[in-house]
Length: 302
Ligand code: UDP
Ligand code: MG
Image (tube, rainbow, N blue to C red; front, side, top):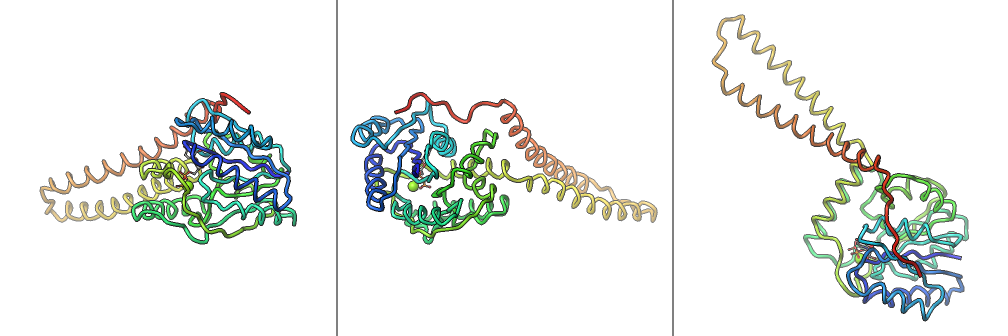
């Protein structure tokens, strides 16, 4: 059986449509399935919709969060409840075509343990959104060392892969990177990103930036190396300037270097502050992780 995990945040218009499309496609292909909707603390009627869909179709289950914990938390909650021999994750807005699930399932039957959906095209997005998402993926790919430009959360995982993901204790989880990090026999399926059927994208540019920063800090120590790099660069600069100053001093024409002093103070001051900020991010993350809070709180299930 395949468990299809669908995180949903304010998706009341899409729940029934997504459940219908997924069950139709899987029933036609003769694949036993269950659908797990994770209501990520929606403010609209998403939970009532899930309840309604469950009344029509026993194979549809739901989890309700006590508040909005984010898509990553929703994915992990769904995987935690999944009973299937494999589990797929897809979006509620049908941007991930359900037909691709069948293709993924066949690959899983062929023995692949992690089947990743990669975007052939990115679908329609506004110019600003495309630009910010592009920048986000470039930085992320560098930091995480996985090509993120075409990666998506549309994946099918074997039970073994699901269990290894669930065994990872970090409270700030990042599904895309973690499901690639775990290894196993991986393969890819291309899909065309569809247009969102209803409602609007939940990602503002601000949310995207904070997501990028939090995942870069969570998945890479590259910014820390920047601190070391900046330190080495200023040290080399200091040696050169030091030699020049000494030569001038001994040759007797030391200038009244007020401008130099101010410039150096400003430069060093900013480098030190930026470095402290970067280190601060990591300390904040360590602090978050040491609190050992749960990733999410479930307030109801059907
Ligand atoms: N989502 C969620 N919690 C959030 C934001 C989004 O569970 O805080 C879900 C949303 O309901 C959808 C999926 O994550 O099923 C992708 O969201 P969206 O379509 O807004 O993102 P995009 O497709 O624009 O990347
Ligand atoms: Mg979407």
